Amino acid sequence: MNNNAAQSTFLRKIIIISTLGGLLFGYDTGVINGALPYMTEEFGLTSYTQGLVASSLLLGAAIGALFGGRLSDYNGRRKNILMLAVIFFIATLGCTFAPNITVMIISRFLLGLAVGGASVTVPAYLAEMSPAERRGRIVTQNELMIVSGQFLAFVCNAILGNTMGHNEHVWRYMLAIAAVPAIFLFIGMLRVPESPRWLVSKKKNEQALTVLKRIRTEDRAKKELAEIRTTFAEESDDMEQTGLMGITIPWVRRILFIGIGIGVVQQITGVNSIMYYGTEILKDAGFATEAALIGNIANGVISVLATFVGIWLLGKVGRRPMLIVGLIGTTTALLLMAILSSVLEGSSSLPYVVLSLTVTFLAFQQGAISPVTWLMISEIFPLKIRGFGMGITVFGSWIVNFCVGLFFPIMLANVGLSGTFYIFVAFGVLAITFVKKYLPETRGLTLEQLEHQLRNQGKDLINHNTYIDKKRA
Image (cartoon, rainbow, N blue to C red; front, side):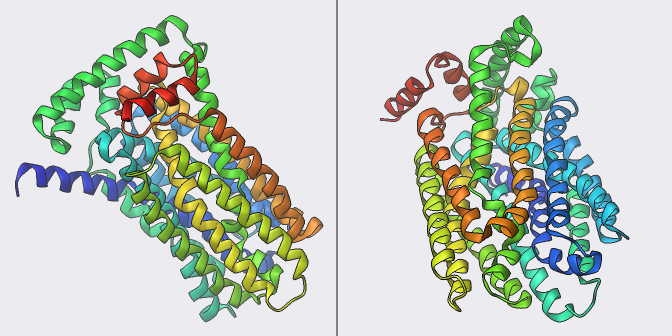
């Protein structure tokens, strides 16, 4: 095997192993979709306690993202993922054997700490290991693993629900499956290196060069190391002069504002109301529980297929147009769902209409919005505060996600399917407005070039977008 092939193979190994964190993220957030109806029967859950079970993971994820980012800056991306694998495994067992609702909520919260930490650390690790021309496709492979994990959860839920639905503990088997990829994640991360950019941040330049040579040609590795060192020295001067992780610097504050906005935009589309409560939505529309579990597999299939399309598009289309088109598509699907849920209420065709519209919604969400979101969050922050910045950003995203998870079943019970989706339509309009006004274009630049341009163009991010467009032209 020649050097280029060996480097490509090793980089592929890094991607597959680290994105098991994304698979766990997806499975643990998706499995509740099918487990909840059976858990409700055993524990006698109300709409409020259903929301607590689903959203306790999301609250934990918000905290996990906040502290996971800081820990990954301090301990390293690799060590942080190893620690998260252990938490995934322990918390999964806690959920599986929970004797009552209190233990379940606590275990789901702990599981959320791991999910939140993974949502920050894995994209950062992938972005820092990727060559600039492949960064979009590599980082979004984590999104592919997230939706694959959700699809796996939906399939397992449907199989177990339709073959063991008579067993009151069937939901425990659904939850237990997540322990397996947690073990593989831990073992796999023992075999891959630390991020070279994090090593530079700790003045371990020789180790960073050794890692780069394993995933780049020698000349490119040396050139990239020099670029990383120069950029890190520049940002260190800025941060040391201002303190507080550079938040007092106007261009850093502006990037943080954009990052939080991107994270919030992804959640206010209402995507996770479908990913967490898809079975309940289909039941509310008229399907029986077993049929809803099977129908929900379509949501998982389209999510995976759309993510493949999104990865392909990221190599050809800018981030901003993808996000805008995606938001227009999801908002339109939600508007149709709100209107037709009211017009066709009680009709035998309503369940199939709702299912087709949720599939359409997810095609736009997973094919455009989600891949761009996780990619841009991993791109825009300076190296010195990448973990911190991503932590703050994803914390905001998970808090909104928590609110969706907690209040969706309550809204569904009180204002119905139609009224609930009208609310998400309004949020969709706000999201489109934010993206068009504030989002910079980041395609085609190394992380160091992007940071340099954002710093120099920080006074006017709209001018920055024009600058990038002219540069490509």
